[in-house]
Amino acid sequence: MAINLATKYATKLDERFKQRSLTDAWCGHNYDWNGVNSINVWTILTDELNDYDATASANRFGTPTEVQDELNTYVLTRKRAFTKTIDATNTQDQMFIKKASAFLKQMWDERYVPENDAYRLKTWANGAGLGMVGSALTKSTIIEAMLNACAEMDDAAVPAENRVIFVRTDVSVKCKLATELGNNQNWTSKAIVQGKIAELNGCPIVAIPKSRMPAGVEFIVKYKNASADPSKMHMLRSHDDAPGIAGVLLEGLCRYDSFVMAQKADGIYVYSTGGLAAPTITQNSNSVSISGTGTIKYTVDGSNPKTSSTAQTYSAAITITKNTKVRAYAEQTGKLHSAIASFDAVYTTPPAGN
Image (spheres, one colour):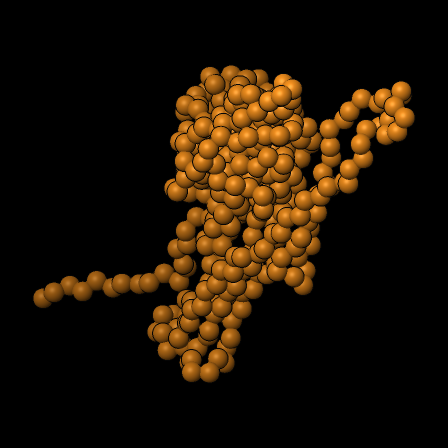
């Protein structure tokens, strides 16, 4: 005679592990998207200084020109949604295990949060003005690399406060093993909060899972207000009496986006091992050449080539007719955009008769 053993289904669901957002605290919220899908942001452009001429009969301050400005438009594009049903007959025969509210929370935790973090980090990395492509970091080199990144941001006049260092989880292990952090009181005495593993140069170091960090990026240093990160709608709802459904209709919609502000690109620094290096800009007489990998975009008015309407694709040497600030970056399908290279080209007046 056969022995049929009893089987019981547990009433407690087995959910995947999840983490809260690791980027929310470092999003920029200086701009308001209420009631609109896009915003225009003006920037007043400064100019070079010149010498005051006390002997001139007129225009002792120099020849006056109109103050210039730059206009950038940021359009919200991300509208991420889902819809599911929980059929009443299935619910009856599954010990009523499926709960609408629990599923909606699970979708938010396991889908929306990781996707939003990954999107922000990739957007920030693509829009970065500063960065370096180098070899994989070790416990002996990582702290120096991070300090060099902070120093480069200092040189670009980025405020020292409200900076964060996002580091990939496997790279964060090297941070923990670094001798410099072993002697850091912030590392030895503070608990891990919101992914924070340590503090360096006044910056919290936040560990980011590989799945959320852009490929090849080992760490990102970000000034909080270098970006605008609108999050306009978090809709999670259930309908108990939806037409044509015996049960519950579940719907979710999240509207969000992320933008690196055109004038604050230097507020983000990216260290990667497989990205594109910033182009090299050189001058020969009154001609400027740009070299690099991939497609190179450039501007000659000092504006950000990643966002400016005046950006052009480089194909041949650029002739200048006055002192010119050239800025350029490289892009290539499948790779993050490079950092932005800047070069102050000095116009040389040709000899008389030329």
